[in-house]
Length: 163
Image (cartoon, rainbow, N blue to C red; front, side, top):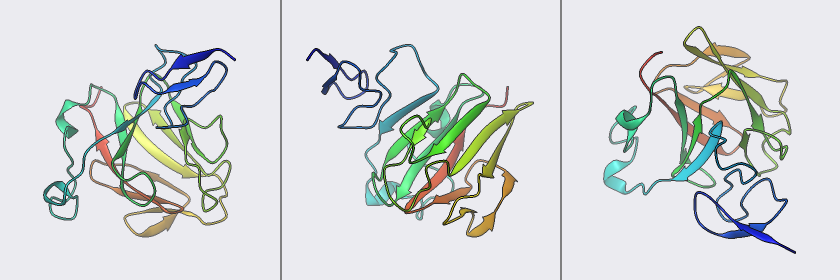
């Protein structure tokens, strides 16, 4: 079996693997930037609760890019960058742009869309629901600093400059 190297963490992964087993990054194309999980060190001093709406490197996002940063739950500190498209799937299905490997997440849990420079989140009929700032929602616009909950994953939204 031929192996390749994960472009994010450098781990060896199987040639036809779609995601890195170590960090969850997409492995099928080095130039695919639709979703890139990046692990960030989050210390107690940098915790979102201490500095609402911010995490390290929030200002470093390029124009028109959104990041979902896991602030609590599995994989705390992982940042999923959403760029290079208009629709992103969140779920437990391996083909999801934001792949969340936990039974509390539906296979096709939610979608994030970029429409005329504004980001929107839509629940796709998930069993456990999707929450924004503690309120269950079916569809809502997203703003920097919003807290999104999908299963056990608690994210904070970071936005690059509007396009």
